[in-house]
Image 1 (spheres, helix red, strand yellow):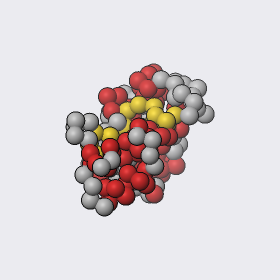
Image 2 (cartoon, rainbow, N blue to C red):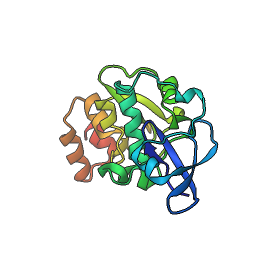
Image 3 (cartoon, one colour):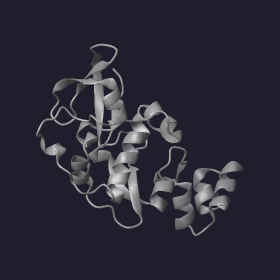
Length: 191
């Protein structure tokens, strides 16, 4: 099955080929299969079968931070020509069916607070309501794929940056202690 193609505000799924010039697509609004010239789809002139589904209405949010986050989320998962695709779509990260439509994404996520951006709670999980939140840049940096987590003797696990902040020491000090072979507990609490 081919990946959906971003056309305007929706993703079209090409489900077959009628001829060299015509493809069979699934309407992102109603699910109906319809034939359309491939060049019309590729140019963005055809984005739906023409149904009167509520998704055809304009939501008035195209110039918002929420809409930009939604478009970027879809591109990271489905557009192999963008630089960060390898960290998302290529790893199998995808978007739940509900969020293929901006209105549903916005209903679930709401307004993005000032200074926040879209973040997945579990970096190996998909973009879906139960795994996404609006986060600060600091939270985003601590929730990266390459973030190292350590635990003290009580089993409490946090990132190196979080422990450094809690213990009022520099990240480099804590990191160097670990690099020199100190146990995680010793690195956090000292010898």
